[in-house]
Image (cartoon, rainbow, N blue to C red; front, top):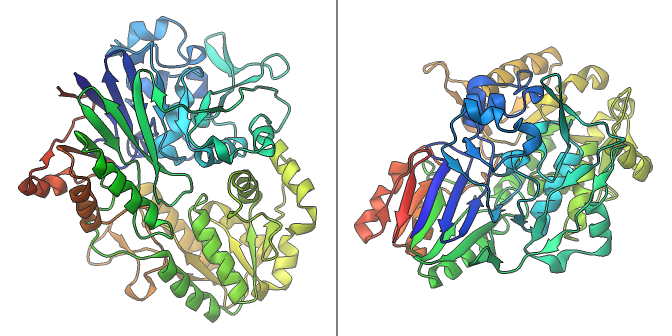
Length: 525
């Protein structure tokens, strides 16, 4: 009897945590942060209290109360479980199959016991490490290594860095042939003063517990994404992770659907983020539309897009070359590119002739930032240099970098080009509201920015003439239906969607559609 329990990703976008149990094997498909739930209680400056361990996360329902699954240094032994009655005991878990490095799929791996193996592609592993290395010591983002905590007078605090090294998680790489000696050296290096109790990244076998599994590269808005298939006693269970067909590597998703169909799966767990969309924008269209906007700009260009969307970065690098500009990235972007370059030579380095690195005014640099500035000292560009030659540059900034404008002083004719998704919650809507004030203050023209619809307050849309500057990381509804029809599972379980009912139409062709509730277990004989 195969059991699937859905602890996240049900009737929401992201937060996937799917437990598969078969015989003596237990594994998770992803273990991500549920941003939809998190935004109900927290925002940028209001966060779960690291000093309270897992208390806030369990109390507010952001983590399922699964005894034995989580880090002992954050649970205060048995005391926590006297307050939260466990819904299950998971002292024995064989691993997590991690589909990609977006935090809504990977983030809450941070709270799992460090000895639980993480199965991922090399690219996903190295992106996750670069994200954590260049982060701000957030205990919600300890995906690749855990900073040991100790309780002092009822408060969880990071252990003394001189005494306690960080504990690296046991990553099992699905494509070990991509790993070089330089890559392995990076994996076992931790910037800063704290040491690292390093674990050599291990090649993954084709078994997890007693079950055989396969992985399939797919196209998504982050490199290294993969789907999985696990051979259970009830047949193959296939999990898509996140995918699309309209990116530059859409052929990978097509190959996955063909190979998954050959397995004749019993169950397909499929994402449905973008089912309400019937039209798609390709990355080539983003290039064309963004190029047109940049060509019209008379001074500075700021391009705002997802921080780990390297495909979009390459698009703007191409635009920079076409318009005789230089693409200026942040230090964390340079660090990420360097980490990804260890795995794929298709990823450019910050040494690329069309790329420079922004040298912001910081009183204190973290260890990884010092390494970047030392390695690329000849590629650094200051706000003063950009201010003097504004028509030479495209800056890769986001809303959270907008406070650099007083140093840059954009001239008339400067544009802020928004190349990312529309607002998904009130907090993002407030960000757009603040961003408009910044742009008005510095007389910059926003291009592709969502605006509040006057006839329908609280609804935000991109103006008609400014669309086509973003390609989604997710397949649209009709494409997903076609993909599922091709795979032809006996049972489909929609996940990572707010519209699971969209898939009911597949029952007309004999595919049974089952929707799960959070915490519910579905069984398959």
